[in-house]
Image 1 (tube, helix red, strand yellow):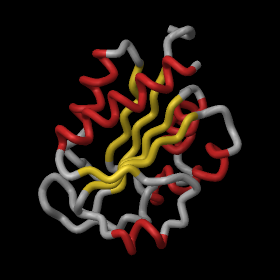
Image 2 (cartoon, helix red, strand yellow):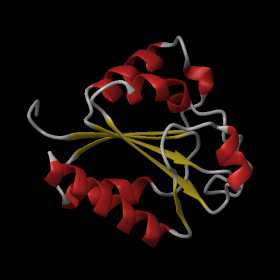
Image 3 (cartoon, one colour):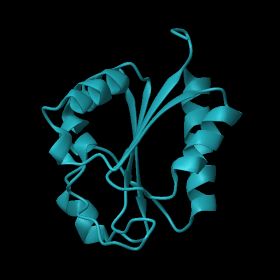
Amino acid sequence: MSNELKLFFSTNCTSGYESSVREVCRDINVVPFIYSGITLSVQGSSLDKEIREDLYASKIAILLIVAKSSTGERIDVKDNWLLKEINSIDKSKIHLLIYASQTVSQAEIDQLNLPITVVRFDNEAAFKESLKNEISFLIESN
């Protein structure tokens, strides 16, 4: 398993996109670490240590920003564990991809001061297609 390409996926709620990530990873032979509902409240916990180990064992990190959960509950886009690691990821050898659903306004994205361009998507099919294309490109370019 140590030679397999690993992907880290994080969102701060159950977004409904987790199955698309699993499917894309299966299709292109990537091992996924999927963390849904990971907010800032896990910092300093044993779960925090596990998440951090999985993140830094990965070659690709995906941050999904949503403003509504799969049940329609409003979510604070800033309450996301992975946001606190962005600067460390940016300086590491992990490829970072950031996606935002249509539930997130451009103003909310701008307030996050992210180091890379955020890929916006309208629906799950568009997210899945973009994710597959981006990961395939990263694999081919390495």
